[in-house]
Length: 214
Ligand code: ADP
Ligand code: AMP
Image 1 (cartoon, rainbow, N blue to C red):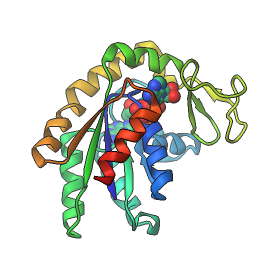
Image 2 (tube, rainbow, N blue to C red; image 1 turned 135 degrees about the horizontal axis):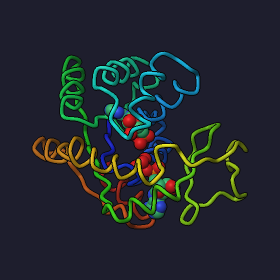
Image 3 (cartoon, protein in one colour; image 1 turned 60 degrees about the vertical axis):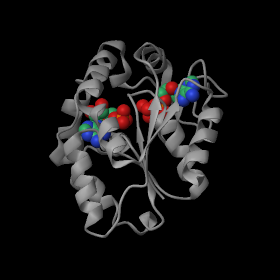
Image 4 (cartoon, rainbow, N blue to C red; image 1 turned 90 degrees about the vertical axis):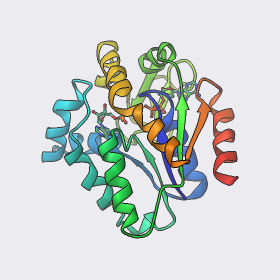
């Protein structure tokens, strides 16, 4: 199963992608997570990406596409994958199509998690990310059992630098300008599915399951 999760930053793509990947035993490929791991490890890619991420801008396409296409070569991708945060521009989507077409392959579902901007701001200010395993919580809606500590690995939970309100506004503008056109792109291809992302996360997951099992 090859699935793309679409939606604004903070819409809940990662939350749903992780559940879907776990259920179908396929990898969850988040370009944001890959960049954050590179930043943590001080790689050249990480240093380049950080400059853009800190400003709420997209990392240039040429630093993203090869990274993802290379990741597909890993044997764990044989049964498929859930892409989270990629593609984020029309050129990235076209590059993905071209890379898959070479193997007679294609994405099966592009699932748009739809959440209005007003709710996004609240989601982002409450999001807390684990510095150890990358698990995501929300102070109000999905709190950890112990404040500031990850349920899964016990590491510290932080507010991501790019989740601060001034950067969130910029990221939302970037989303509307550069990423939202992908909704039309995948609609034209006939693989777009939409879910109401303001619902409870289990209700959303149920709807996503119905989509991929239909
Ligand atoms: P994205 O990957 O799209 O940036 P996340 O999955 O990290 O978004 O979710 C953003 C924030 O909203 C997180 O703090 C997450 O715990 C919370 N969240 C995710 N889904 C829901 C939901 N259905 N209802 C309420 N909060 C949610
Ligand atoms: P995310 O964790 O998906 O919210 O991504 C965090 C940040 O990483 C984004 O705001 C971008 O700066 C960068 N990023 C992640 N994925 C991509 C992508 N596909 N294209 C460009 N930049 C990306």
